[in-house]
Length: 440
Image (tube, rainbow, N blue to C red; front, side, top):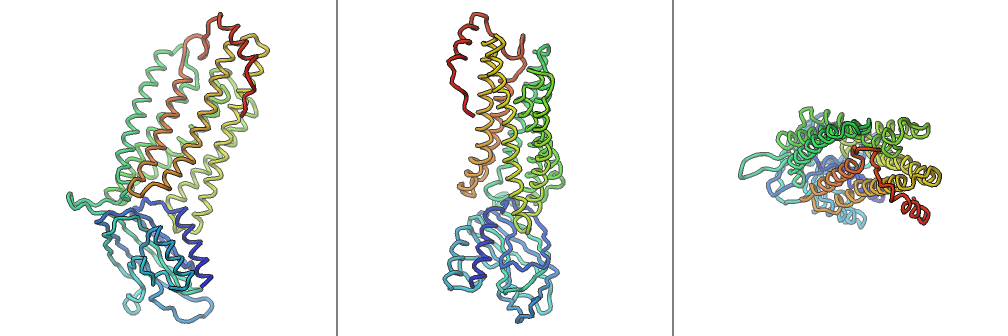
């Protein structure tokens, strides 16, 4: 019983951390798996939900030559996260010896319902309770190894229009949200092109790079909108997921590269990168490749993959390293500007530059913190009906960051961004002298 409890406890931690809650039509191969619980997909049901489940090529064996398997202790069930905690308590207290015996789960199919000598089955299960459920396979036979092919289809039915919705109840609005932000970024790109044309004599290479970042972000949103739209209607992405991964990869690399380049002052303050700045790019770009690879594996394998937890940790670690790495060039620029302000006699210009880079440093930290911590917390505490709110929060924060970056580093006439009257020079010099050390 202790072994069963420990295995179940591991499974619930695995379930809570990795479940994707997107729940398209999914086919899964389970090979020689002895886990006591195998989570598949998580889905937010309305009062008109349904699960279609087809399992083929079922086989099981006991490598330790144990007793014949009790088929009633093998099967699929649906359970909410809250109920799963109570199921674990029942196991720990000895009230039940198998999760399938709990009255807190919805049994979809147990293997004692199989026809004699049958190696496959198909079943349909209606869900009338509006809640977020996870499809789980239970194997309550110690040391029993099972293999099978599982094809699951989760969807909600709209009784008014008669349509099927394959997106979780809390994410059915995602296509419209992504389309909306796509339009916003298209308008932002058009405005940026107009700004570059109007100030073409003051345009630097970094400004064209910023335009490329906006275009890739817009294309990424378009592909994600189409991806979610097709999943919503048909349960599959019809190839849009491939395009989404491609543009997500390009968008991630260019965004982090842009932050590094702006932080170094490349193009508008100096025409070259120092060796240490090049090394930052050499670190960030490969790490972004690894991060995007990990994200693809997590999305495609789902919560049931035995290596999904490892890939999740890899993604989080790499993302944190990238976020920290891009801050170093900004810190170096701030220190260089502070030193230059003491020696080159251009106090007013250096004060403006220093102020801008300090603001950018703070904004980058706020953006990283919000999109990595606050959005995750919002996604965790929000009801499954409002899971779209975390997407809106993340996209709104990203849009605000893009707007801040574009506005503060836009093309300006005369010297790059920093035109100040000569009479302000003396006041700026005094301000630099009285200024406290900037704490990073």
